[in-house]
Amino acid sequence: MKQINEPMMKRFFPVAAILLVSSAIGLQGCSSTNETPKAAPATPAAKPAAAAPAPAWKQGMGADMSTSKLAPLAGKMTATPANEIPLNNLKLPPGFKIEIYATGMPGAREMAMGDDGKIYIGTRGIGRVYEVSDNGKTSRVVVDKLVQPSGVAYKNGSLYVMAINKVLRYDGIAKNPNVAPVDLTAKFNLPPEQHHNWKYLAFGPDGKLYVPFGAPCNICELPSPEYAQIRRYNPDGSGMEVLATGVRNTQGFDWHPVTKQLWFTNHGRDWMGDDKPNDTLNILSKKGANYGFPYCHEGNMPDDQIKKANPCEGVTPPIALMGPHSAVMGIKFYTGNMFPAEYKNVAFVARKGSWNRNTKIGYDVVTVKSDANGKNAKVTPFLTGFMNSGDQSFWGRPTFFMQMPDGSMLLTDEQLGAIYRITYSKK
Image 1: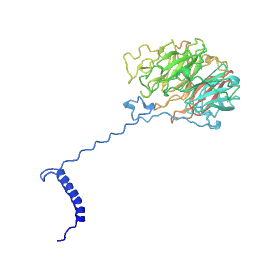
Image 2: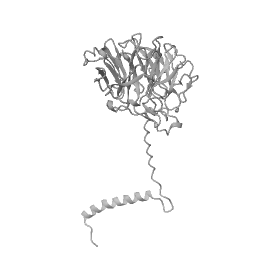
Image 3: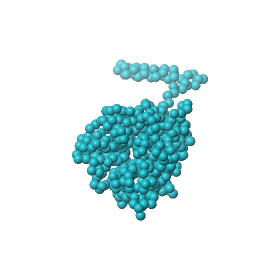
């Protein structure tokens, strides 16, 4: 037998030791031939990823509508040439005429007239404020890249622009187009949520600035009381007062020429079905009046999700129901002399048009004739043809009015970024 030399032994024993230890471990891991090997400990199952929150416009969707394919309608954020606007589709009462006043302002919403006939136009999605002059022939961008600056107003030579998170005042802008704005944001105490927080601005007969703050949801308990309000301020942002609560989303108001009371439109909530609740037309009856949101709609309809005892008790009812999901926007009382006498002091209301309804409604302008106090209100179609009821297609979405010094009426079309002029002449 060969003798194993010492160097080889030194190499052999470490290897043998490792093999012996491995064998011992293997024997410990196995039971006798009559036992089943123990299973390895189970690895904890990975937790499923949290579901993405539903988009804000789906909030409040009931189980009965969970498979609905309805969704908000995208706006057209590019300019539409005048020759591509099908005005011939529009219908008006006899003697009235509609024509294009200006184009090239995607997302056009509220208008305010400044000095020398200049008109300032707010927008929502595109974030711009436009100026139109020379009887609609010339336009420019006053400011860009704001967060939904749909609200504009003009007083004493100053243009007021309100975005969701900013308030700007342009002093003497008519004569100095490039004037730097005065930032009034800190004075107005703006709540931060974006949903329904785009603005409509107007100076009232009292010289104060009236501003809405919509609900930050489709339907919910308000996170704080600063939402679902109409407020008024001194022009510099001081002296804030809350005039109305429970107002989900007003996008237009005006003062009755006789009573001087504030009339305002209001959007009803989505996802309660095709036919409820209605959008509404309301009168501010007293300071601090409650209009129901989120517990009560239309003045007498309890919400099906956000509940409390006696939800409609103390709620101020509307003066007119304006159609379910019709998206009522601007309201303007006609005070000029161009239209026939029966239109004097009559309210014109723009209905931008529904998305949360299987059969579309709106896409038109209606008139509301009533007593001065809002009694006996009658809603009548005035301007139609933006939508084809046969195939449910639409091409325009009317939003806001402005009465011109000659008694004609301007109307913005948010979808096509145009302003139309409505006139009347006897045949």
